[in-house]
Image (tube, rainbow, N blue to C red; front, side, top):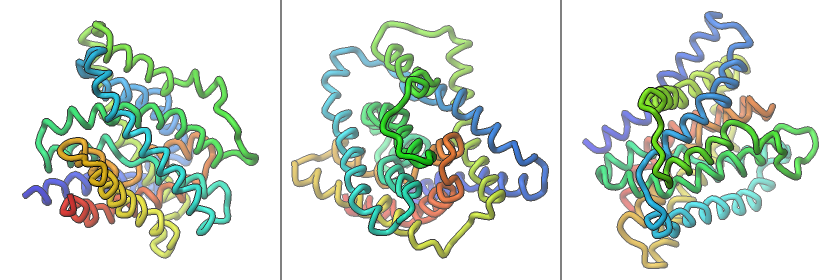
Length: 307
């Protein structure tokens, strides 16, 4: 029954994706719609998601005691970045597409599919630990993630994140989320509910946009072995390697299964959103999301068996 529940979580990703393909091919939306949708997601929905996902009560003392779990997430992400830096040049000559490999190694779908899969496997108590673990990942997504994808979209190498990026809604929403998490501040109910409602649209709309990009670029490619290389690392080698490392350090319980299961999730849908926003190869990003989601149906149960 647990496997069937997890299967439904993954399969739910494909309904908005196929709907996006259908809408674009039947010309029910115009060619500018994906770009307009990406603007909505980047400037409105993603900031709401960040704020919404950080809405849980935790004081400074609890936050301090949770730092090891947060720093574990940060360390794993940077380790994955280093791994990508070493392996990406071996399979991809195009500089821009190598940045997509870096992002794919670093960021999984740790919230939208990560939370329900963890709850199905380990119960509701796992969600608190996942929320703590994901704090660092949210920060890195809109900082380091922005930097990596900007490099994928620029004609020349980008050496830094600009003030425009720092003042962007996703980045500013981090400060709002952290303040609401740590300080005794509460938003009015109508505003809080509105943010949660908008946040709920982020992943479905990002998948809808992914489908439209696939239809626009005719990008669905099952012969692209480089995408399967990315999926092999993202779905199996990274979580299994992390499992062995954490066990070697004596980790058990939530400190073991939360990072491993989250890292076993497919590539974050945000890769398509950021690629479309910053002019990176969005067709390649869409393929990565599709195939990593398909293959995760089989790889997540395998990783869980090893824990």
